[in-house]
Every structure is written in C-alpha cells, then in structure tokens.
Length: 399
Ligand SMILES: *[C@@H]1O[C@H](CO)[C@@H](O)[C@H](O)[C@H]1NC(C)=O
Ligand SMILES: *[C@@H]1O[C@H](CO)[C@@H](O)[C@H](O)[C@H]1NC(C)=O
Image (cartoon, rainbow, N blue to C red):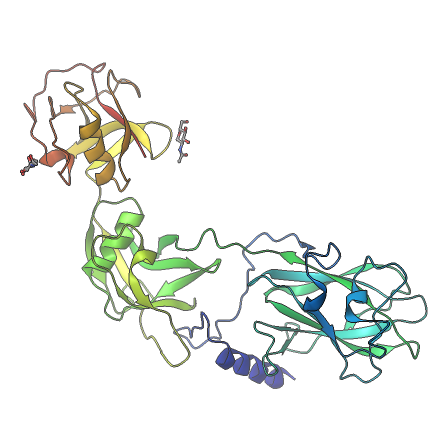
C-alpha cells in the first residue's frame, strides 16, 4: 500500500507544475505540509455556503433529489446518498489555492449511514492527481463514520495543503446510506513568503540561506550564486553589505526543499525574493546550498524601541558613538534611513530625543545633499572631536 501511495504521490508531483522541488537528499519535498503553522481547523465554507453549489460534485445514487449539495451539514433532513460501490465519491473544490485542511465534521442518518470512508486530496482535481490520506506507516486510512446520526469531528493525521478533497465511502449499515459533512482547515495566507534567515553559521552574520516559500521554509541552490545575491540577503537582514557569497554547501546541506535556483540579483535589491531566479522543478537537481557572510554594520539606530527609529550611532575605533545634532535635518536623516534599507526618513530628531548617549561623539555639522549612499560620505565640520554634549545628538524616524 505504501508503494501505491508513493507512486500516486509521484504521479501527482509530475502532473502539477507548481513549486515542485527535489531536496538534495532526495527526500520527497511534498512533506511536511504546514506542520509548523498554527492551524486550528475552522469550517472552510461548506456549511456557510461560501463554497458554491457547483463546487461540490459526486457520483450519487439518486442524483436528482439528493444532489451533492445536500452533503452540507445545514440542509435539514436531506443527505447525500452515495452509490453502493466503493467507486462512489463526493468531491469538494475548496476554491482557494492551498488551504490547509485539518479534518472533517461528518454526519449520517441514524441506522442508515456510511460507516467507514477514505479521503483523497488533489491540487488540481485532475483524474490522475488524487492521493489517499495515509497514516505514518503509509497505509491508506479508513476513517470511522459510524456515529449513528450524530455529528462528529474527524481529524486528519497531518494538516494537508490542498484544493480538492474527496470522501470515498467504504462500508455502509443500510442499503441507502447517507452522508453530510463540512471540511475543517485554515485558509493559508503566505504573508511570510520571502522572509529569509541564516542557519548553521558561525555567528549572526553568516550561514546557509533559507527563505519562506508558500508558508514553509525552503533552501536556495548555489548555482550561479554570487556576491550580488549575497548582498540582497544581507540587506534584507538589516546589514548594509555582504562580505562573502558561499557555495558548495559551505554551511551544510539541507533536508528542506530547494525553492530558488540560479538566483541572479542585480545588486540593488533589498529582498532576495525581488531577484530573478528559477523555481526548482522536477527535471532540475541541486547538489549544494548557498550561503552568505554579511559585513557587520557600522551604523545603527539606538533607543527608539524598534528598528525604524532611534539615535544614530556609528561604529569607529571599536566603539559606538552618536552624531551631533548641529545642522541635522531631514536630508541627513534620509541618507541614514536609506543606508539602513528604508525608503527614506519621516523625521529628523535633535536634542537627544531618544535618550542621552554616553560614549564618544562622531561627526558634527553634517550637511548631506541627499545623494550619498552612506552618512559617512556626507561632509561635516569635524569627525573625531566634535564639541557636543550628550543632550545634543541626532536621531531619525525612518519610513
Ligand atoms: C516603532 O515604534 C513606534 C513608536 O512606538 C511605532 O509608532 C511604530 O509603529 C513602530 N514600528 C514598528 C515597525 O514596529
Ligand atoms: C552631493 O555630495 C556628494 C558627496 O559630497 C558629491 O560627490 C556630489 O557631487 C553632490 N551632488 C550634488 C548634486 O551636489
């Protein structure tokens, strides 16, 4: 059975052409699905009518009077009546790309119901695309529906990402068995897509690159990986510059699916996902992962409570020091904010707005013209011995 399930899965992978990946180790990348997400299993819209009638199809025994829509939990005394053969099924198009499905609520008529059933799922509903829900041993699960009239929740062992779901009755306790159900799950949104992180590095500046793709962490292939690509990763992580691009699984191999290959950044991107790349498909393979080493920043915002605001501090001679607020304005603040990866400045703050810093002061009378890439490229009256007190330092609020 495990072999059958696996070959169906492989067939499925060959037929659907989206976000497919082979991991370096050859482990099938379709698993795990959303195990890391909190998905509490709300009704996905059968009962509410969110899923329209024509999204429910079936091979029914008496299709006219007991049409598939009567499989909804809220249709009073009317139930869907399957054919007696085990080839019978009822199918729902959940309509949404990739909801996470956690289970079902099922109900049968007292003494006339489906007592056991299987469940299949599919990304595209195509004839060859269906995969059975299997247990951890790879055996097709036979779910218990023998609740004699009551509504019961049936939990799936793994939260499945899918669009189409089928219930296939396997046994009955009366010749006209009945079934109603609702699908439980979460409408997965991919708001985290594109987030990056570095893993197994020597410190927070280095590591193997991982990126969120369709809600799950994936890895990046090292083919054509270069300094410009590393720069996009470092910028996204809040560093100004990259120091090295690492190839050949320098920071280790991965079990994760490879979701980006042949990354080709221009060098101006602030996010890795903004760069051109090739999605991994079933014909491509990837032997090694991409890594980066970022340069430690020489500028930071302190005392603002979050990364978007604070007192401007520079790293020089092994110490962080603040900038004097003499002539500090929105143009100077804009250079700082852009240097830190923001689109610009909202406010320039004077008078040690974010606290009174101890330690050295660097730069006084900064007069940027706004085109500079770094605040240290801007002219100032003096760099190393400015005459300002701890109550006269510069801050920014970035956009
Ligand atoms: C940063 O903190 C300020 C002030 O508390 C707040 O208005 C702003 O929304 C915060 N920004 C972020 C990105 O958290
Ligand atoms: C702005 O300042 C930079 C560096 O000080 C200088 O190279 C550039 O020519 C200036 N641009 C304008 C438009 O003044």
